[in-house]
Image (cartoon, rainbow, N blue to C red; front, side, top):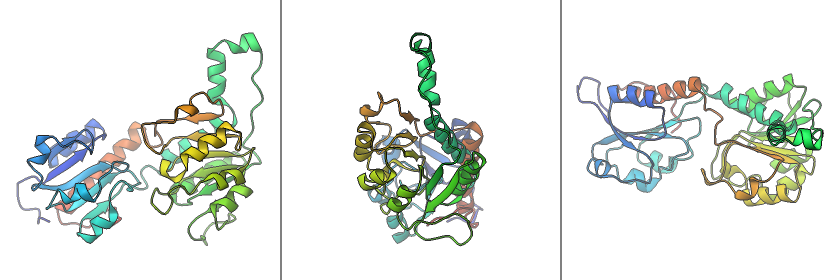
Length: 320
């Protein structure tokens, strides 16, 4: 770490995608080496591995122990997103590498999309759009009736900042709330369930807002989907790794559950082709925080975290 008196810019590896206007700001503050993808190893990167002191990366990018080990002078990893599961936290902690993320600034935006996915799935908004565009309203008559969120129970897996914000929105639409966390909270009025399966059996719509990690990998499996049942819906705005994707596809195909709204997938940008033909599924390309306003705030906070480190100041959002 420097004391801020040197005029030499710290060398930072920036892994895309990060908004271009944030990259422009970072160029003013750091010497940047830009990778279009974490798997690429261009000469510019390989020739400067000893000079790289920081990484700026999307939270879903895979910066594993092998990647970090290539950088002997790495001091910090700044994740662009609230999730930081793409970074090998264990390796970072063992080698004194700080890790930061960008919480709070994306909470409302992600919760907004979560609520939009609930409405789109239950009210058949996307299906209705396709129905009209295909001329089927005129040729086949009215679309089958949809379902109202009012009076239904929303079960939230991961009642953190985003989960609470989603709960507030859902209550405005007349939904009741229940939740599952690793531990029960004493500051919310909602019923707590000790397992995802118990929550699934008790709710009508299950929304995932938990972190992606080994602890939550395939948390939503065949048994949980069976507990959610043929009138239940799954909404995933967390990480694709939280769901056993093969089990989910099968559950949708055989109507084990009624439908799903999915913003994230196990091997992005790959999406199981079997989902494309299903009318009861709403798909998004990992868009929960994807507004100009939120991505700008996230990008600025990523840069601020790096800047604080290199100026010897406390890190605003350190997670490891």
